Length: 169
Image (cartoon, rainbow, N blue to C red; front, side):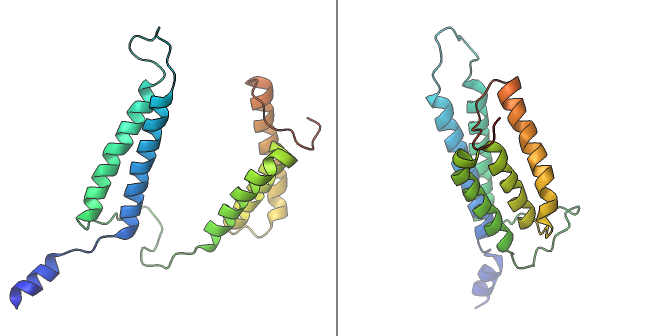
């Protein structure tokens, strides 16, 4: 019948990717809010204390997440900006995601053993490989220089401890 066709034409499919992003924003907002509410605050803070901005960010993320979920459930898809150089119909390439994910996991495993500088250098090289840099050996000096600069800034200037590992730093 004609009503079935009209209903079928007006009914939109739920864009699952957009819905997953919206649920991720909701989860991130809940995570921020939970962390903010768990902060211990001294009674000397009468009004704005260390919880204020994390709570503000958490609430803002929750509001955005609810709006995104509503949009996704109505079938509204996020469209790329005109300035983005992507093909929305192209098949996703999961190899770079897997390479970068594996590199992050390797970094987490090695940072305590090798130390911050060497494990972050390997992380830099792995991310470069994930972004299709085939001459990874060229990224090693850049990664080493950046990770050493970060290490020195955090340990010497800020007084924070990062694992030195096997390097005599």
